[in-house]
Amino acid sequence: MNLKEFNEFREKMNEKILNNGTLNTKRFFNLDGAVYKDGAIPTKYKEMLGLVASMVLRCEGCIAYHIKRCLEEGVTDEEFYEVFDIALIVGGSIVIPHLREAVAFLEEAKKEIIGE
Image 1 (cartoon, rainbow, N blue to C red):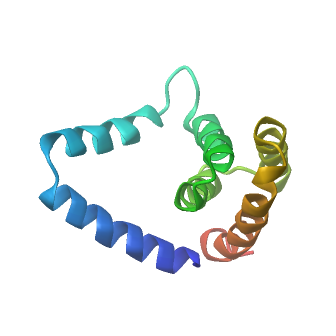
Image 2 (image 1 turned 180 degrees about the vertical axis):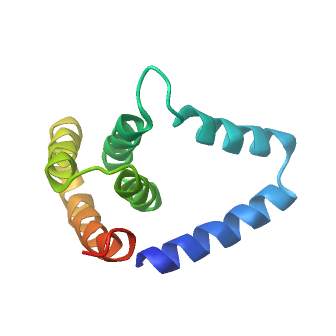
């Protein structure tokens, strides 16, 4: 899935979920967004942490989302590859297929977000 498809799907499904979901669902979505705001740890680093966790947990949608957000927060290629190293060391070899998907998504997303 490319960045455009990812964004469209995410927006469409979030709208359906939030329009039909319970107060608990809405609170969780709100908390999820609030946790990544600047605090003692800047948003950029929180997104990098989110990317590591997503890779270790092997969630492709989460990986794509955090790559997008990391790009928006100015994460460099060098930083991305160090993040990938952390995910590999924490998650082990089972992360390798998700690393491949992450790099492919990163390459496509960079074209749309930063024009590379």
